[in-house]
Image (tube, rainbow, N blue to C red; front, side):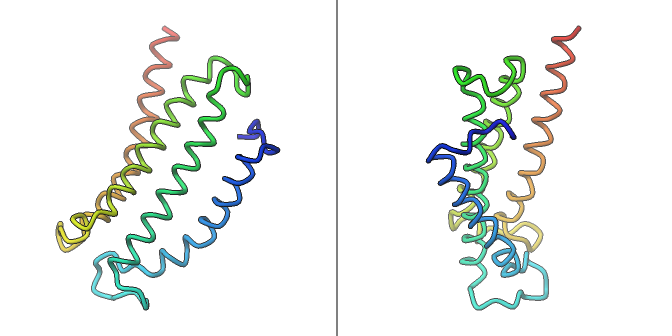
Length: 147
């Protein structure tokens, strides 16, 4: 995203917030046990630690979506017109991933277990497939338009 305008106040603020969120992510990750037998060395209860981690990642994804949205504004001509559709798809997928992280903060997703692992963690794992499915869809659409 080298074409992203960095001199605007909004972009600079979001970039600073994202820098903070990315900096605390490893600490929050180390507070989690992921349902394994060994409990993480944490002073935080696991439900609070995982909710905080989910909030952190959800905020990172929503900021990424905001950056991608700036690129999709056609009037600014920041990217080539043929790439605008691709960036809109990326933005929408980033919003979906952020929504999954935010929805997983609900207490029901912590108390429901699947194979001894919290449903919250399972949802987080599914976000990997959201982006990959979107990439495959994008490739399929581009092949169809070229044919």
